[in-house]
Image (cartoon, rainbow, N blue to C red; front, side, top):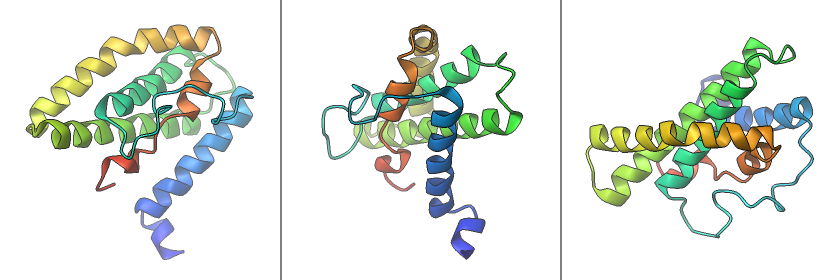
Length: 146
């Protein structure tokens, strides 16, 4: 129990699992992750930085497109923001490893991809496809030292 209360990786995994359940319950997600064609649909040993960046953009789009939803509590918004931040960090780590790049360069490239993709994911949310996409996202820990 002590690990979960100290904010370590087990606590993040539990929080991610709870976030997934809360999103499914609150947003009425019906599709299963097995049916979704998401960012990690091709089996790979390690997700690439683009997949993590796209997932970060997807979570940011979720916040942006649903910010006026009266059923969305500040706590849920914060949990979704934390998830987006986890994916941002994973994308930066993955970019640095794949390209042997400095953190500053990785952050610029990843943030540019995220900013360029948010509106596309907002459009996906309007068509009801965003939840399935997010369910198929690789876990941020797949990028290494998470």
